[in-house]
Image (cartoon, rainbow over the protein chains, first blue to last red):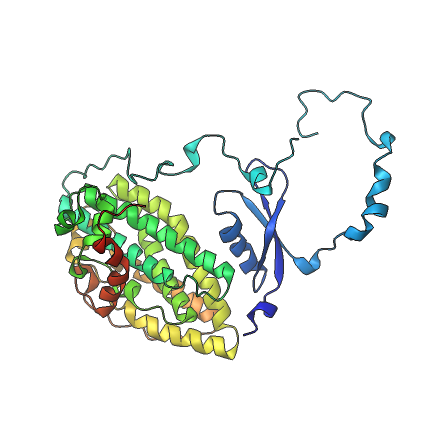
Length: 96
Length: 303
């Protein structure tokens, strides 16, 4: 049986009814993208979690290297001037 | 924005409202709060037996699908098959409860014992001759390809019937049909996706899909022939005459098999209804043996 190596891995992202963005919820194997979306519906939206599903081939995702955490992210912790803290956000502006 | 502990919580939008559950969140009484009065001019026994026809189809098809659990080709397919079986069990539960509410229980009611709800009494304590399911849903699964072809046929027929049943004069049947239509559309499409990929796949998958189609097509012989009961109730605006869905169903099945590059098997000649009138073969007895064995040995067991 060669099923496993013929079915690529897909990462699944689901957006909830009240959400604005898709959230990564897990992964699955499927023969192609159409089957992946529907498998995700069966696996990750069983309990009414979401209204929109994205699937992306895991091979299509480029991720940052955990070993490079230092050079990638450390310089950002002491640069206060990058945070907009000097003005008030009005109370009725959502999603800031 | 508050950080959500898990992705699942981030997506959970329950705010205490049970509005998104069609029949409430209590799982004890499937028809709780629903008016089950039989419409004017309808014999309750007729209506109940019609509910048994539709309910038994769902119950036994679910039982066939469940036979794939722990044996599906991939884990994702396990969940899909389980979900579809659960959908059908839900439909069976509502339909059998509606049959019980119409007073159609027969000797299963005495055998079941008082604490057992109507739908369970009907499911577990009726004998094979009291079931009203068709040969199409009772037939053995065969391999995965044959299972998907059978599911395609059964779901297409059931979807066509349910789509029309939404206009039934019995509000309970209409509501059950309205809920079932989305589920059945998904089942049909899931099966169709597989038939397309297996038929238009490798030489081996095409061979199996073709063999599956050849095995399933004869089971359609009595699917479109109405029993007297169905004709009576259709005239009364309550039921759906299966003859009326033949055209739509044959069109869908032809389209899927064509696209799957499979040869369309010969359509069987019309046969008189068998399962709908209590006739059955060894497949039904085999299914019921597994389904009912435990309940009958320990009728009022709880866990």
